[in-house]
Image (cartoon, rainbow, N blue to C red; front, top):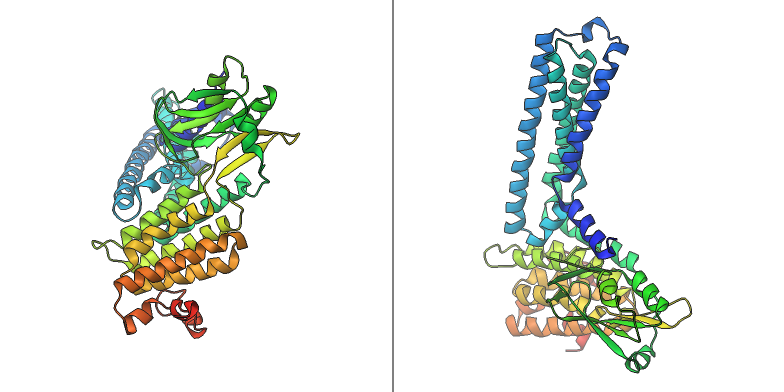
Length: 435
């Protein structure tokens, strides 16, 4: 029986592949052509919808050729996407572009139309003219052209840095809501874990942890009266032979195989259970925009907008260093490392602060985001935000000389430059710190 991890990897492979849907489209197109041939003798079309064998053959040949040409166009667009992603966005974004549903629908529709026309062409060779099929092929071409226009519109608009940042923030917040990060944790579970016999389960392959089936791990531990302790969080890279998890208690002989089948490893991280990966992609785009080769602080400011939305969603939860999960009776069964709020905040802020401290626009927008976060997140998470404000002020003072430039850089502005709300309120780092 295929393990949960193997099924997860299979789903990931299918979702990222660019051949699965086109292959299905080819099969569907051939099947629809067979259905059409079975209906030809039963359907009577108006005189204007009937064709000679030569006309039908030419039309179907044109349809089949057009589909091949359109497929080549989509492939060309895909090459441009790769160039844009590696040049102006983040290479990590390519994993998400492969999953674009509209792209797969377009490819599947083109291959289905091609297969439909190709099968009908063979029928014309036998002397029969599939009038209904020719009409359907013409309508299919119209539908394909509409899909192509929608795809081009998606290509033009969805690959802008701000659109990618918005998509990453939305995806990250969706993951946060789905993981139930605010679930109650067992505070006294560590002592119970240390007092039992330990079985070490080592990884059989190298890779990044893409997902963990917490529910199955808890159920397995409950069924065998054990406690499972993972040493790696989702997104961490594990080497072959590393101790992936410990089993406290007396598990059955096949425990290692069963438990490894509940932790999915892959070549790179995914967004399935890893909101930090969404933060990583947004930050990648921001620091690339701040590089001397690009020098585009406005794009970095736009990234901070959506980064703040994602961090605000994370900061609304009680994030702990380790998630301790219990079974239905309240007994500790699973301990999983989780990222702290400080970890998420450091990931989102530190590199932008480091590379953007020379840009007044970036400093002002970053400060405004931190001030907004301080007022919207849990009180227990506010100390980390104040710490980041202090680090930002320190970095600015070390980089910017005193005078107007320093005052400009130490003023919070939700638009980076040109805004006025926080400035009118006098919300600057210097007055706020009493300096």
